[in-house]
Amino acid sequence: MRFITVFFSCVLVGVFAAIPAKAQQVDLELVFLADSSGSIDTAESAFQRQGHAAALTHPDVLSAIRQGIAGRIAVTYVEWGNAAHQDVVVPWTIIDGAESAKAFAAALLAAPRRAYGYNAIGAALEKGRALIAANGMEGARKVLDLSGDSANSWDGIPIETARQAALADGIVINGLPILCREANCGGRPVSYDLEKAFEDKIIAGPGAFVVTAQDRESFEMAVRRKLILEIAGLMPMRGRSHRVNAAN
Image 1 (cartoon, rainbow, N blue to C red):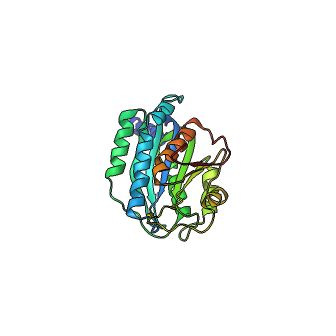
Image 2: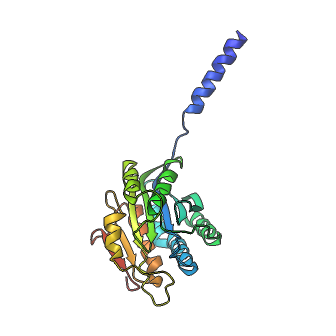
Image 3: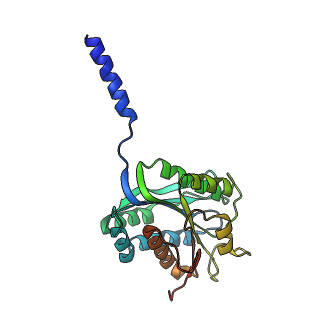
C-alpha cells in the first residue's frame, strides 16, 4: 500500500512538473537587436547603447508603458555580429516604471562589448525569435527591433528564412537603419538606399515599420519615437517609413 501511495505521488509530481507555470502578462515583448559588426566602431556602438538607454528612461516612453493594459513591457538588448556572435548584453527585464528602466539603462551602459564580425542579420533575427520563445512571458505584441548600417548579410542563415520563422511565431520585425552620413562617422556608409532596403528585406509583419535617424544627435529621438509606436501597437502616420532629425 505504501508503494502504491509513493508511486502515485511520483506520478502526480511528474504531471504537475510538466505543466508550465502561468506566463507573466506584459503588453510588449521587445528584443533590441543592435548592430555590433565590423562596420560599427566603438563610438557607434556606444551611441546605440546611449540612445536606447536614454529613450527607455524618457518620460514619454514611461507614460506610454503605464497606459498599457498590463502597464509593463519586457525588454532585452542583444548585440550581433557574425553567426557566432549574438551577445545578450542585458537579459529579459520587466519595465514597469522609472526605477526598472533606469536599472536596465545602467546595466546596458556598463557592459563590455563582446560581439564582432561580418554581418549575420538572419542569425540575429533567429536569436531574437528564440529569446522570445523561451522567456516565459506572454505579450500582447512581440517585436524584434533591428538596428544596423547595412541590409546585407554575409554569414549564417538567410534573412528571409529568419523572417519567415519570426512571422510564423507572430513576431513583428521593425527596423532602425543607421545612415552613417556624418563626416566623423567611423562606419562605412552604404551606396544604396538603406531605408528602402530595410523595408524590402528586413521588416516584416502587421504594421511593421522603419524609423531612421538623420544624424547621431537624433538617434535617441528616433529610438524614442519607435518605442512609443511599438508600445502603443501603432505605426508612423506617414506609412512604413519615418525619418527623424533634430527638429522633430
